[in-house]
Length: 155
Image (tube, rainbow, N blue to C red; front, side):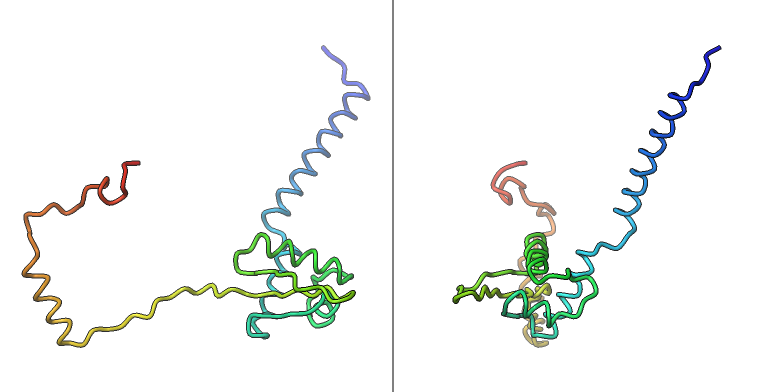
């Protein structure tokens, strides 16, 4: 029979703490609110109110943006906004021409809705289209096309 010593218990406690720490990290990653995500949502709301575009300095944005998730310093807010813009295809960050000590930038919220305008045919046009389609339709033709002709090569 093997005896359990003080070193064994301390090692087990360290191992338990290690796994507890990782369990906390996983839980936070899966279920906790992200400060950066909440800041991104506040910036999105702010830009929508400003008709999707804003220009100014970090200090101006810091004083204008109402968010409990913004960093305490304007410089840190600008860094956070740059990081958000890098990972979001909907937020564009552009540095503007520097004038003296003023370092301005532009934030643009891209339109996420992409829609084509559908033009409904008149009843006469629809009837003509249906009659043309029925004349050219060949029921013996295969239901699919050659994938090489469609894609240019097989995959």
